[in-house]
Image 1: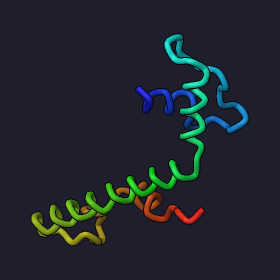
Image 2: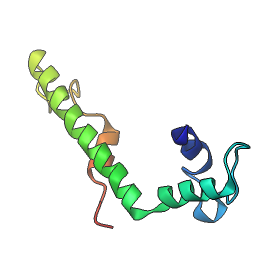
Image 3: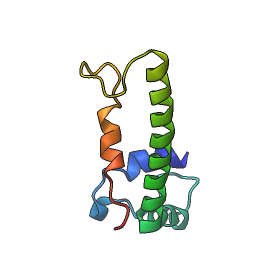
Length: 97
């Protein structure tokens, strides 16, 4: 449920436009503010990036294994066995900020 709330009411919303009151009847405004504070914290953002990088590494290892199994070089010229472009974006994310 938190994932859907974050996706609908937080992700992509400018900081000055994030709701300050709960969008749900069964969630108090204080509980909502705690979620927003957590999502906004630098620690939470770094944690999410580290999870994405971990998944990327797992995917890359599995991806290379499949390429070897199919006798396809992972860096083939015909793009038949390359990592999706969005992984390059995740891998280049700076976690030091």
